[in-house]
Length: 495
Ligand SMILES: Cc1cc2nc3c(=O)[nH]c(=O)nc-3n(C[C@H](O)[C@H](O)[C@H](O)COP(=O)(O)OP(=O)(O)OC[C@H]3O[C@@H](n4cnc5c(N)ncnc54)[C@H](O)[C@@H]3O)c2cc1C
Image (cartoon, rainbow, N blue to C red; front, side, top):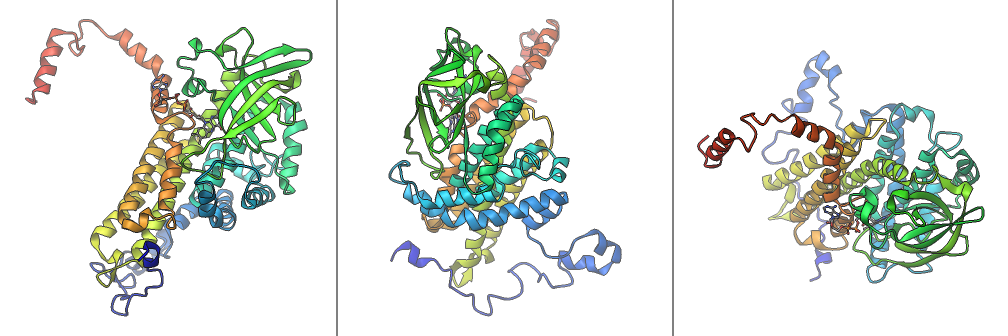
């Protein structure tokens, strides 16, 4: 018998099993149930919301009205336009990378996203389509809300939509009004009319991934994409790799070193992909988020006019770092969305699957497992929301949220797979896809190891000060004979 034939979705618990309480609990209608006891006293009734609500509804209700409405809109959009295509698109690209023509489902999802304003929501109305009421809270937080809901429905299409905003961010940070007026605003209007014009952000080079993001050893590395001066502008020569949405982008923000100078001269150029010399070489065949291509781009003397240099010459690092600080929290939210999706699938499975004539959720082991999944997901969501509320994202916090959420989500998904047994390994259930999708978040926007180093980098000055302040006579200094003795005692377990 095939595993899929054993999906017990149609199985109905018998009357005895569908009793009004799970074994070990009083009925939710009992006067002793937690939600009912509060009805007894008027003050408690007012203070506590005893209306049965899902976690999602409770979290949404706690948001300011404009953000709550946004979250509801995002869920509705994702369930209607992303989720139905998630498994099909993933399977379609399981044996090969993207090629032309691409599935119509991707075009349709992009058009719908454009019409819904999801491709023009980085600017307030009337420039973009974000209502001013949402600006009571940081843009990063709004992006985090958005990314979580999209990721919960489908990692591939979510990345495609997120890569667009990643490409827009450095343009907006540059404050180049001419470019915003001539390029960004017309692109927004086209998107809203259902004719998407996408943006992408290209920093990674064949020999520089982490270096390109963090610059740890960039000072000694040789840039592979170089801008050569030309009359009225610059000619770009070289390659970029793994560029999300690079297969479809109409505009690409490209970081390039100036000829004769190294990485420190990095400058951001806005490349019109219709220009001669811009080549989409190939798409990677990758393990997850398959509806979004990771593209190798080649620049063969591709011309960029002076007016499309963003933020001035040699200011590329500033724009790149600001962009990554802005985008790492939403990457953490991708993981929250994946963890939530895995939790939902496992919960649904536990209620449907029968074991020994009873639904799995009747077993306490299962209840404990589901509670753990919910707790782990809620804790990374709380971390991301807390850090994303700040208007000025700080690298260390963005990095902590990124590696903590993406690492923890991987554990949540794996645990959800445990709870679903063999069904968790089937493509139809969707868990193994989520497992593969989340794995990518631990690599891009800086590997999680690099993000850990960023936390230390931000506190370098403080750490150096501590070292400088160290009194050689301080008994807590490890090279002090007395300190050595006490450490020795500790290590031998005598304290
Ligand atoms: C799906 C996907 C989408 C992507 N989208 C984009 C995009 O849109 N735009 C873009 O520009 N890039 C994109 N990237 C590239 C991504 O940002 C890089 O893959 C990432 O920065 C890691 O670089 P790398 O793969 O070259 O790894 P490397 O830098 O080669 O790292 C290899 C290993 O060495 C470790 N390491 C590296 N340097 C140090 C150090 N100094 N100290 C200690 N350990 C170190 C790393 O942690 C890692 O474990 C994407 C990648 C993926 C997988």
